[in-house]
Length: 283
Ligand SMILES: [Zn+2]
Image (cartoon, rainbow, N blue to C red; front, side, top):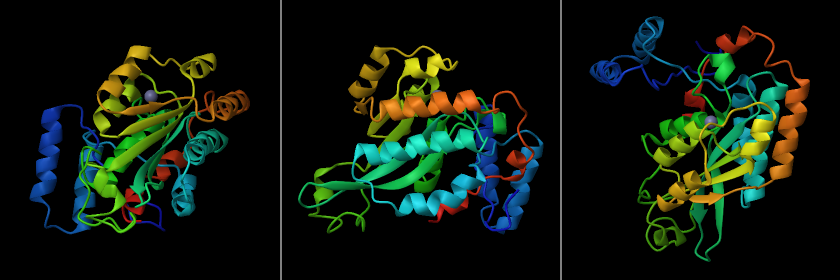
């Protein structure tokens, strides 16, 4: 489904078993020269058979993306503010739980300074979409990978990056061997999202509220240990925790205590507003 204002797109994020996923991929590949409308029909066929999954952002987030992307991001606090805002608004809009995330790409200048551009956003979509895997981090990771067209965010620099000063050879970015994608999350990840982070290809994870904050409002983070973070760092992923911690924790507590999200059924419009990934992909 799509809204009249945006072209529809769907993402096959999993079909239960690897074999089915491969079959789906092959089916799309064979149909690569068909019209997009035909592909949409194919996707619908898969979906009706329970063989595809569509990840969708709430419409408010889709509408806000141009503004989010127009901002200048230079500090951790500026980027964490967006993750916390996504968490707060997700609850206020009744479109998911109190967790937000965003992935940024860092660009370097000749003088060693850097700034970031927004690649994707995510927020908890578990209840609206009936999918236990759709935490803020996993949504942001999957949308970012869809946007860059790769299963991993561990990527070489393109020949010329117009967002880095000078671009290409000789610029500040040349000192970096890989593109730098950083995941900001309003709360320390659960066990699943820590695993997803490890395999995502991000170069850094930055957390706001703590595991204890999440548990205090009734969320089970699973088997997450200090060694989990040490493992990420050994894998080359920088870890920063506690950025805007108080603001993130306060937002979760205030909004969760006042909302009805966890006691009411999801509004029908959750299912009317389907992903508009092309909007994110074709910014
Ligand atoms: Zn999680």
